[in-house]
Amino acid sequence: MKSQRMKIRNLDYDRKKMKTIHVKPTLALSVLLVMGITAMVMKSYMLLAGLAMVLLALFALAVMPDRNLCSFCPEYLILYNCRDKTECMVIYWEDIVNWQYEWSPKVDLFAVTLVDGHTEIQEVYAKGRIQRAMNHYAPGKEKKVR
Image (cartoon, rainbow, N blue to C red):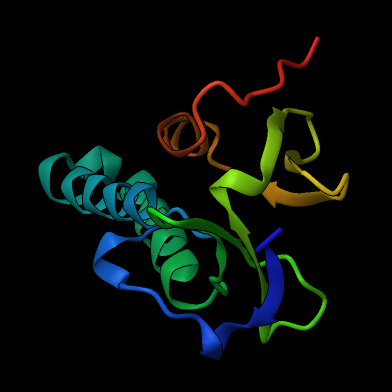
């Protein structure tokens, strides 16, 4: 088994080939910002609603922290769920037995079971992007939740 825990600085990867999922939904917040500005400019009775949208989007974009949840490379999957924030778990595609996405009202979980029986669990918030990437890189390994 080649999968291992390692320091993030020691990763050998090409950022152009990598798809990364972040905690902060930057695209959705940017759309909210544009919609708020548009509402403020277009209709005078929408000024307060537009202002609230703009302030919320700016606060989330500028103040709230962002971090990587996971990254998908052609050779491996990187999970940033280690207690030590300078470490990550590198999982090679051939080491994956199965994976599943578990939805719950509190938090969604992405679980990957490895050939040695170990399971890595990551809290995630992007079901569609994760399922597309995993079906692309690890086809036929999804474990369906009943």
